[in-house]
Image 1 (cartoon, helix red, strand yellow):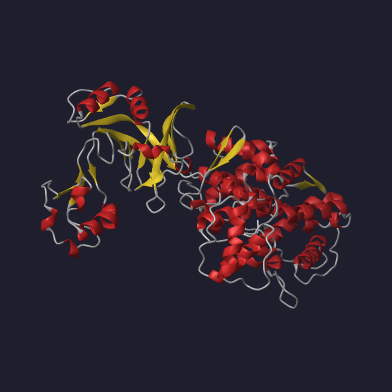
Image 2 (cartoon, one colour):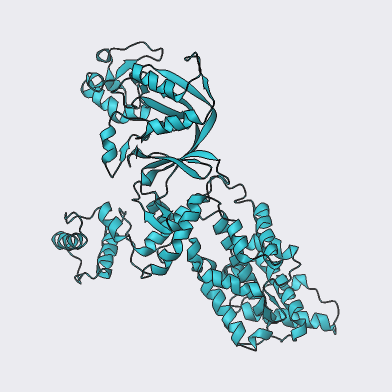
Length: 578
């Protein structure tokens, strides 16, 4: 926006050339555009522009919108000052709409204005933040127009409101349709033309009489999990504590800044904080008192676990809900009829068949240092009594250091060393000290009851060398915290999973098997301790996801953010002040 003493926006006059004095139309446009400059200048002038008659208002609002759009196109300062980030989409829409006002007619708001502003005020029920869409600014502007009879006669004010409402509508469509996170499946993100078509089509539906709720529902994912989470939002939002608490980012590069935020957060919880910065002894006492009050392990030390408790406010949990809803928007647009669903923070595997839960099992997943990745794939084959070829990442981190200390490490772990051709290698004949980033050998564990993969393995294509499998440490399923593996997913009820796959799929034998297999075949082979590979003809889709909350019976269940993924996304996408 131009400041006092600067040359006014020239584009207004480039658009409307004056061909001869005395033209009533030209005089109006010059006066109007001059007044428009006054209205939107940063000087704070109280000058009143030439007033329009009620019958002329729509035409004058149209002229005002066209002039504003022409200037915004070449002057980003004006767009920024008006909080209009969707400039390209606005340009596309208003040009298609011949710059006609969308939200008002003859100095009156159209019926869907109330619907939309009411939605903005309560959009937390969809996991959105009202101020992302400048709700307070819009509500204040509409209130001024409604209450000030002089302001109602100023077309520039109606134009400003029209642009702000359209911009907010586009922003809501984007956040509901594709979310705020970096996309991995949206085809139209970043493609201004297709994005503008999407916005325009939906705003035209609203103008054509379609209900706002119907429009907004149709752009959101159509998943049972997404719907279940949204169904839990109203009760959560209605009961949440809206008090703002300081967010403690830990660990941090600036330890002094972390300490200041920690002390402020403890003060917000009712703890008396000394005026001067506490020494280590005083800080330990403060933390011990807080840990005791909250029923935590009393260490007197600052840790990620303690910070997680401090940050577990309703405001922060709402952000986790918002993040989870956005993650669903990264999913494929349609889920298949049958699929395997693994939600890592819940430590559960589910098989869904035609919207019915066919089976559920506990799982063990990767540690925080070796996390299980998010994957879309499909079961390609099943191996009975599998061998385990140790991935290079585990060789570098665990096995190679062990071999350098003692070549007998492999034997103690039940592992063998082989050449790439499959020949056995004596580990005592190798100079292990010269290897650091890998070894030119295979480390393999033979099949059997002691194999780390257990008696069955479910393969699916992925770049991470992970899969579903049984385990030889079945006692670990009793643990509440089951992030214990190197990255693969261990399935407690693998028998049910195998039975479901075999019962519902046409299976073809590989060259290893001479006849088609059934689940009874698997049982027989396991009893005989025979190794077999079964190829799946109609491959069963697998979705491994990371959702730290889910909707259950119109309430929301939260899980530990075991990999800190939501913490990272929260700090990346959501400012601390909302």
